[in-house]
Image: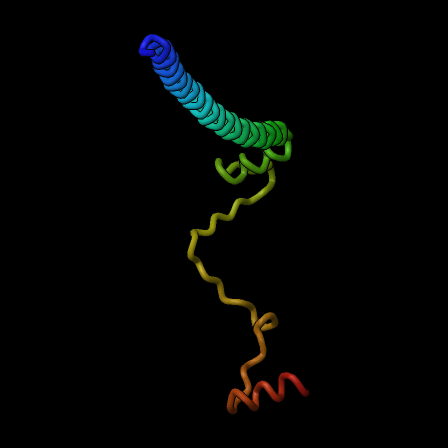
Length: 129
């Protein structure tokens, strides 16, 4: 009777070993799938970031192209020559005003003097008179 049990034990051991090997192989395959999925997500994120950069650079290129076209017009050249170089047309007088200079306004353009009284009284007159 021992001989009949021996082949059965061997097949049982072989099936357990095959099952274990199968589980290990499936584990490796699942690990590879998960790793590939993560890599794919990282590549897609990098592609999205590069596309955003390309879009921003394209907008900048359009803006700079417009500025270049505008800078080639005679009006732009004249304005820059006046502002940056202090040049003038024949017969013109250039007046250079230092920054921070305050001029007194003429009397005709001066605002009316503030009325005397409390703040409430001034508002009342302002709103209802």
